[in-house]
Length: 278
Ligand code: SF4
Image (tube, helix red, strand yellow):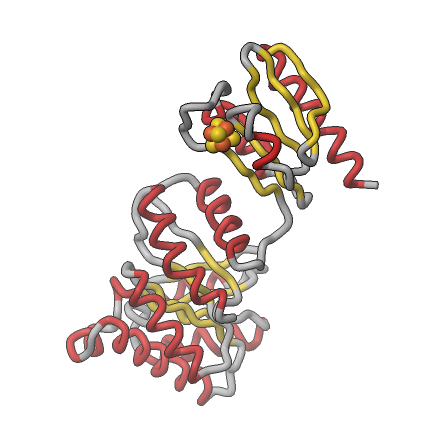
């Protein structure tokens, strides 16, 4: 589904609704006068398109930002826009309250959810590069999702869209709301490792995250502890000197030359997926 995300010019919002979009987002901080919001709402109502009131800590309405702290200004901005839409009997509303600080995101969304029944879209705005961004998104989104707050999420990172989707799936996984897919278990750097788990995981990560079946895959560094530590994994691989062992549910099923690791893993993965499909 396509969500049209509109800033500044309400006429673009109107034009977008000539196309089959799933939702329209307007930013109260820059969409302008109330009559413009009303024009957007009239057309959205006519077309049956939901409106997301997308509040962003970096572009709060100036009058509110001058008088209140970020969280309070964001809540008041949402409240003001909701009043306009509700006065038109427009109820197909989604709200997002995105800030850069995880703590502010949590406070704003909790406060909003306590007062309004509207579905919420969660996110941390300008969250930063990969590692910092994932940490900030996780810190903000997991507590909210665990409280049942949030209907959709967007993990924003200064990185690729693929990484954003992977991070989003993992965050949902931490809250028990995961979409279907592969759960990867893999070893850190470790003195006992005899297999380059980092390189193998990097090579396979995108293929594995593209699988739409609930399985767990373990990439373990040593034969001493690997299969045991990852006994819950559906499929695993670990090094053993110049060889590589493939294991299933903690049981070793194949021993091959390390150079054939990827080929053997691929074969066993395909077999497993066929079994799961039955
Ligand atoms: S399975 Fe082996 S390599 Fe991996 S963390 Fe445990 S001891 Fe280290």
